[in-house]
Length: 272
Ligand code: ADP
Image (cartoon, rainbow, N blue to C red; front, side, top):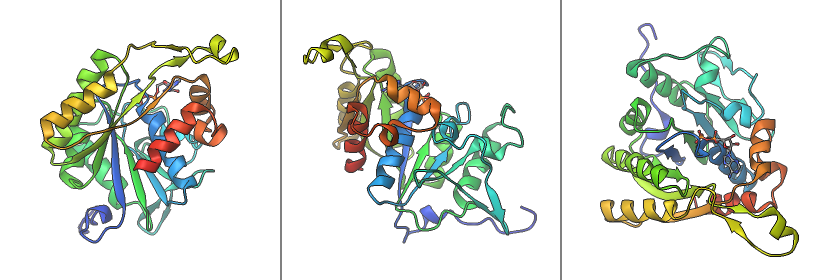
């Protein structure tokens, strides 16, 4: 910004009352973005003022999941206004900073750093109770930038029960710790598939589609490594309507709040 002093990140100021949670995962496809949007809606439903920063440069699926894929932020003076969703959440996405939706982002570290800082400091967030950041999977540039700019952000690690997913999730957690961020817990997603036939008969048969134990394993490893308790915050079952809700821009916590997956997400939000 020509000659102007860089605006400070409000969430990094000592008196900030906003809780910042970065939602991280080791690899893609484990449901990190789905978890982020549903937690945001559950927190908003509980009366908290919630903002979401979609910093997943490769995925940036948060706007579509929240039903605002085609919205663009407006500008007031030199501040960017975040996009409001039907569920009362304010969202800004790295995808919204591109001129065209289908444009591919091939940014290197410094550009990514600038994009992240812009989403934190040039956006008019108002007085938020909670800010959720959907990080890209893995231990890349954005995670390092976030650690530098917002060391006070707390990190939530999302994994599936699968051994291979858990192993990379541990690395994402360790990376956050190296950046002096606290890992507040682990969420196991896609934990099991409630057998639809057995449910019909009143039984509770679960299919371990992705194996079992990944969430516990990550929590145990990180607790040992860091010397403080990193709990499993909750487990979310596989649910077709969770996927459908994301595709339709109406996340399950809003569309079908009594579904077991939605109830699990709401219970996790209550612990944040
Ligand atoms: P990530 O952000 O980790 O890449 P996404 O949130 O985009 O993952 O999820 C990947 C896909 O899996 C999406 O199509 C999403 O709807 C689906 N999905 C995520 N969690 C669940 C779940 N618990 N049950 C059913 N589908 C899910």
